[in-house]
Length: 118
Image (cartoon, rainbow, N blue to C red; front, top):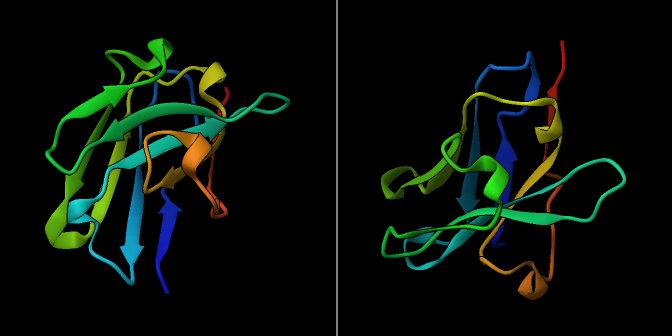
């Protein structure tokens, strides 16, 4: 069964950091682009960052520039989202998918909740 599982979310104070993980099982993610998406309360899901199989990255959210980075560890079959200088508006459920464009995602996992609050 092909699966991506998100983890690493939690409650953090403004200005803090979190590292989210997207672990693949049932397939090797080396050959796939992996995107991180998020959905804030009452808002539509939006793309955040995507990493291509080549290692190149795409940023879909201007608000995270300079604060979030995406990386992949093919040996661990995992993609990471490092989030620094977190703001309350970063609060939401974060999802990963084997796509950069959410229009092509057929199935969403449970995601991982990120709450930025003092």
